[in-house]
Amino acid sequence: MAELSEVLKQATGVLAARGEGVHLIDEEGRRYLDFTAGIGVTSTGHCHPRVVAAAQRQVATLIHGQYTTVMHRPLLDLVDRLGDVLPAGLDRLFFANSGSESVEAALRLVRQATGRPNVVAFHGGFHGRTVAAASLTTSGTKVRSGFSPLMGGVVIAPFPNAARYGWTAEQATEFALQELDYVLQTVSAPADTAAFLIEPVLGEGGYVPATPDFLAGLRERADRHGILLVLDEVQTGWGRTGRFWGHDHFGVRPDVLITAKGLASGFPLSAIAAPAALMQQAWPGSQGGTYGANAVACAAALATVDVITEEGLVANAAARGAELRGALEEVATRHEQIADVRGLGLMLGTEFRTPDGAPDGAAAAAAQQEAARRGLLLLTCGPWGEVVRFIPALVVTADQITEGAAIWSDAVAAAAGSRREPMPMGQPR
Image (cartoon, rainbow, N blue to C red; front, side):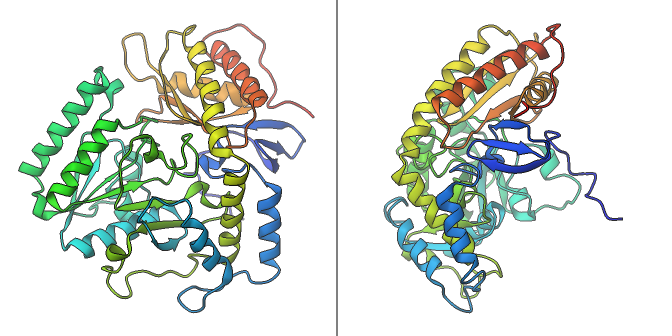
């Protein structure tokens, strides 16, 4: 008898039977508010009717047209449509299946285009689990341990994580830029540095936004030294932060943009975007893959773009995110173990710490599990698992935010030692 690997750990005990918007329903009919969105993937909610219809139509006509062998209309239409939402000047696309694959494609591109060997990534970043992507990842050792040696040519510099250092944002930014200059002077000379690679908001690293001055500093140094700026928008793209792209909050221009997750509402699809002059420097044969730009995934992505733009989901993410943040901050005022509430739009984290200020992964896990028992699905992140993250689909309503916040409030109180009776998983329907 075959079984799943025991190494795969489940965040909840839910056996999902179907999804509807921001809800998952298990096989016994119990309904859960899903504030995980498949780790930020189901941007338009579970089974949005327009995405379902587009995928169903495509399944009946062409499931797979391998795009280095033949072209297909969903791919060509998607490329054309993405021109409306990509940053200005990023007019060439390469498609793959996962964020990790696109990170590696971006890495290959910047090294080939510049002829330089090194990439500077930033502490706390998560870029994937494949070897090169894991070599760039420092959100936690679980991603990069046990299969050394990792890829060479990677240098890690500080991220302006004010909460970690106990500083102001200005102090953390000044420190991080000073240390980056020190790295360029002592570890990777600018002439050896192909790119800076960074998430506008740390994802697995704890939902920590960058600062405008830090990203501006990266852009200035990149321009001065001929280094490329690569923004990993796998989790922050597609309206998640209340702007279409996470970097829109910071006014910075990327040379290469990496996207995945919310791009196709749950179908596996990722991409890198770059200017034509840069993409043309990729070596012949260096871009390809069997399943990239799958026809059904492209059809779903087309519908996703239409839903996000036509239904005003970016503005909804900003408005609902402000409501959720206010509710989370109110809960934090009643619980000393909550040290911080942070994030952008519908990408919010609540950090737990012990009385002496140490990261408290046990408290975060207890609150997350208690919330699941009460019908609210959440995930943890951060190096010690000390942050509970809230990433509902962009279609979430004000009433659903209110409902989720109320469950969270009760869950934190119960996990902190309340004598309330335990509740069954979910809410019967």
